[in-house]
Image 1 (tube, rainbow, N blue to C red):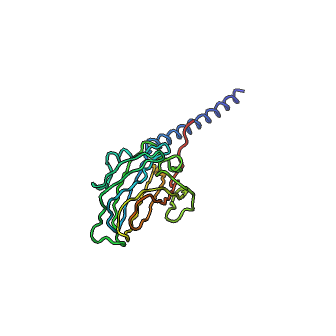
Image 2 (cartoon, one colour):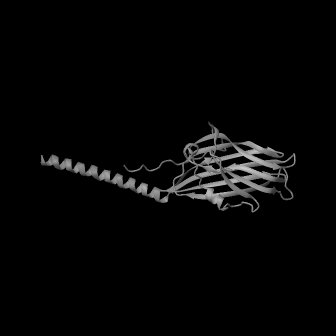
Image 3 (cartoon, rainbow, N blue to C red):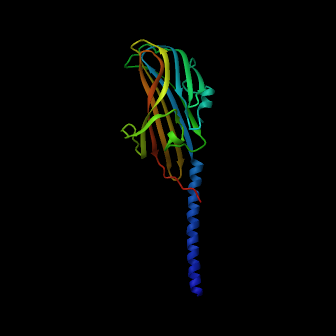
Amino acid sequence: MDRIIKITLCGFIVILAGFVGIISYDGFLMERYHSSLSGSYAYSFSVTTDSELTNVTFFIQVQEDPSGNSPIVSRISAKDVSGLPADWQTALFATGKATMLKITMVSIRPPAGTTAGNPYTVTFRVNISSKNSIETLDPATNGVIFRPVQNLRVVPCTEETSSPSGSPTCAEYITPVLADYSAAPGATVTLSSTLDGINNWKILEPQANEYHTKQSVLLFGENHGWTTEKGTLVTGMGSYDLPKPLI
């Protein structure tokens, strides 16, 4: 009887030690993940033209989550924007469905030598870190994206939108933008916005996951009103082999 009790007790101790070891290792993984986790957003807006534009006004989307919270509005309000020309005036407007950024300027005057094959581009950028993990699997539903998102549909990933890691999901959508300016009849103008969201961490080696979205519209001649931008969204790129929370 004593021998059976000893064997049972030894078995219990071995199981307990193994359980404690697993818990300790899982705890180590979680601690390493959370202590090294960092998220960041990279946003850009570009105007590309081969001709002078005058009396210019744009209304473009500001990226935000479904509740209307945006990671960049404070930077825009403070004019803390890289590459923003001094003569471009900006103002934020809440429409009820989305937050829009109004941009006005007297003119966009390309330098000498600008042609259709060598157009002039003005780009401003905002890069900002996030205190929390960024939603990179389904930002259209749960995360930060340009809004409103209309006619969102999943499409096959192309060579341009594919990812060397993870199992990305690709989608297309449309969204409204206002472009009001005068220009020569032969002018070509492209408006484009991009947003990248990425999480980085290190447990045993550096890992990351991310999403990208880009929207653009090509316009000819002068324009005085709302038009539609076409957007692409690529989500789920990178690693999602994350440590499980301890119960």
